Length: 475
Ligand code: B12
Ligand code: SF4
Image (cartoon, rainbow, N blue to C red; front, side, top):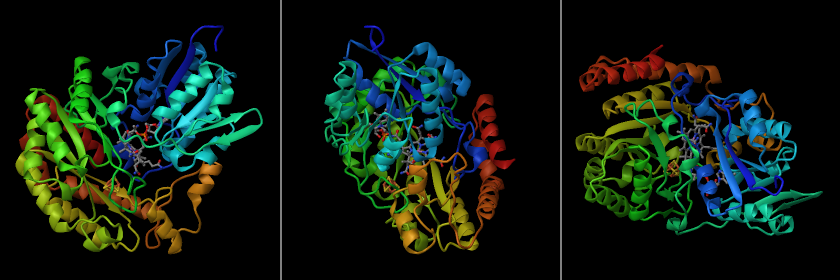
């Protein structure tokens, strides 16, 4: 601790300078949005009642900070503990930030959590910059770990479930933090650590937009996703509305619901909407959902509650490829749900994947035709990327499409020049990127689409916003 004063915890959202991926069209991705890392805010909230702990947060993306600015800020904060959330896809920047923190304040300790740490706990703990990791559900273990650290009770950390630590020459890795079924027991994420005026999205009608979470987990089995077959747990409608109202008081009226699949329990989703309507809360929000668990009733309730866009993982216009990905939906279900969503007055965003093993160019073209046919308002193409520790990666290794588990090597030794590969037998990576660009242009340049979008424009500022997105895609 700093000279008998408070124990200082600094949460950092790292700069975004070392991208290892380009699965989403880069032009569309660049500057697309600032989203605060919710996982970090969830664990930060667990320290609120520790009177001898002081928390600060630096969001490098929102403040446009590079490493020199980050170094200066860490130095002036002089934290006891620096905490960051790591995706495999952000690991290089997280590691560089840890390095910068140690340079700025050699006595500070580094703690990492997040998706990458959940997938590779031992490998992350082995990185030389890292002192502590938290894996599994982070709230409880993090609180216990900080309690022990601030009290100087280092021995106690060794037995906290969900924590890994280096103490002297010892490295200890306990099992993952237990899954908490009752999400109402969590405090409201520490939004107060953010400058809430900084967060928005190109499709948020110019308003501020903040991420919220109403549930965790997803029972479905899509092979490309590492959330597959995880326990679904959730907050009550009352708790969700409490968080919304808390953020509304700060001036935020647009929300991005980050749930993996909010629509798993249709009745719970309906209850949330009904409560928003009953309380007369005026907000807009976006959700991600599956096509097979929304019906007219929920779509109408969603519209009345303020939902103005639903993101659907359409993935492909070929049933054969949907089955390959174990998506467990039919093309007919996709068509039906897009029709119902449109009729309910909610915009649709379709996510497509191209370059799925065995996919042909004509199947890719058919997918884009399918997205036109279902009249998606927006769409985006990702190139099929076997993500770490997914069933798709395992299958591609078994089918000899990937020579070995290259993610494992990256996790053990995250080299700066590492780049994601698509591991497609039929197309080179550059060919897939070219197809991705051309297919996107084909969709957005259709006269029918342009006319439809122009007819929806209600103001000059809306025109400018849409033109900005459009130019980014079409250039
Ligand atoms: C919302 C979201 C986004 C948003 C916002 C991202 C953000 N900056 O927060 C947007 C749309 C911008 C986005 C972009 C991308 N995303 Co994304 N995204 C998600 C999604 C759906 C939810 C994330 C979330 O907020 N979860 C809620 C929080 C509460 O959960 P959590 O982070 O796991 O946190 C808990 C624990 O992990 C732990 N914890 C987390 N952090 C920390 C930190 C500390 C110190 C401690 C102690 C504990 C701790 O405690 C938390 C509470 O229990 C996830 C799916 C998922 N379920 O994780 C994918 C996911 C994280 N995204 C993914 C990917 C690949 C991307 C992109 C690369 C996509 C692309 N462009 O191609 C980019 C990368 C952007 C970036 N550099 O951050 C992958 C990551 C896979 C991996 N192994 O890295 C996921 C897992 C999706 C998937 N199933 O494959 N994403
Ligand atoms: S892609 Fe969506 S529906 Fe499929 S397993 Fe992942 S979270 Fe669930």
